[in-house]
Image 1 (tube, helix red, strand yellow):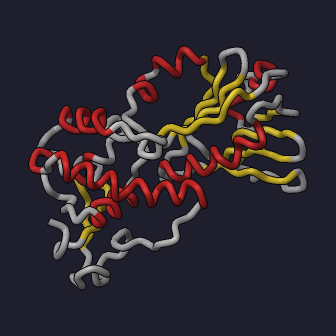
Image 2: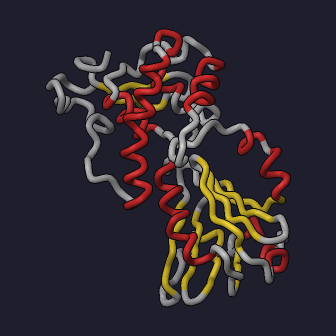
Image 3: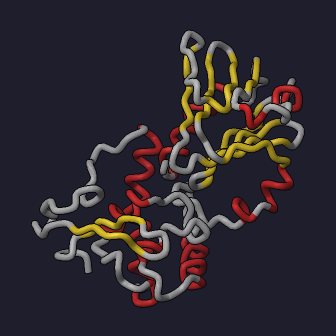
Length: 255
């Protein structure tokens, strides 16, 4: 699943193409949008802003309309030149000044009113964005302590209502960087230790959001059986909590 850094990177590429401009054309080629008339409803409206919050991306248009996207496991955003043919899996194509903004296979793609984006709990209920310019530590800790104290901390930081944007890769890497065992009960993790996971994760995600990639490869994620680069203990992996998402960690140096 694309994580927050991927969505923020996509927003940064889309922004100079669309923000402050009226698109030349908007198409929704997937059959599910056949009766929605997005092109007619958005005709003549400028894109006010291109925003990301956690794993959600928003194209906000004049007149109080917003395109909301969540890519889940399968979707992608791309910016293409006019000479490129969008994938046949494209659900949304927005053209302007020789560029094409294309969303493909994104299970959540909807045209909403601005008021609905403020009320819809999938959005309004999100926790602080891990990639916000100023991270709201107080809100993060409050949401964390409202959660089940028996929940493993590795799974707790995946809860988007607690902190938005972290996925399975960054939860594993953040816990490793902070030397925290992802299997420890959240109730047994101090506030300082929880903050240490955030502080370890933010800089690497910020780099990825800026560059589209990181300059340091994974230390534990998808490396089960290999030696830990810090202590040499073989990395382990197994499913965690209700969703059984595979967790990678080093039992030697993550305490």
